[in-house]
Image 1 (cartoon, rainbow, N blue to C red):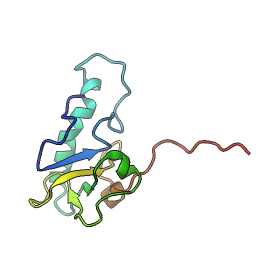
Image 2 (image 1 turned 30 degrees about the horizontal axis):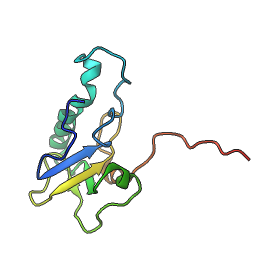
Image 3 (image 1 turned 180 degrees about the vertical axis):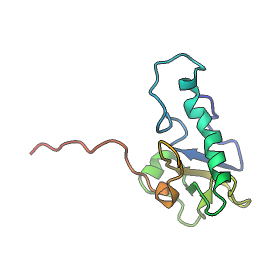
Length: 127
């Protein structure tokens, strides 16, 4: 709720769609500007800190895509390089990049985060 809902930079990263609650943050129904309310927004600096902390390996790889829905369908720009959200972001990447993160530290899923994995269990099929 406190971030920019549209692309504003040369490169924009959209972890977990960038619009919903971040994994591990409490569901809504709390006082505005409380710690619970700010959980998702504060993840931005937790993500940054994690990207700086681990100098041995690049974290938060993301794929270029036009939307979260296309990311979920696995329809990303295969010609664009993987970009790294955080300290390792390359200077030559442009556009919107999507990824999924873990609910708690370590937040980066590594390369696994570049492929959408549903958090909901599959629906039962009646036979």
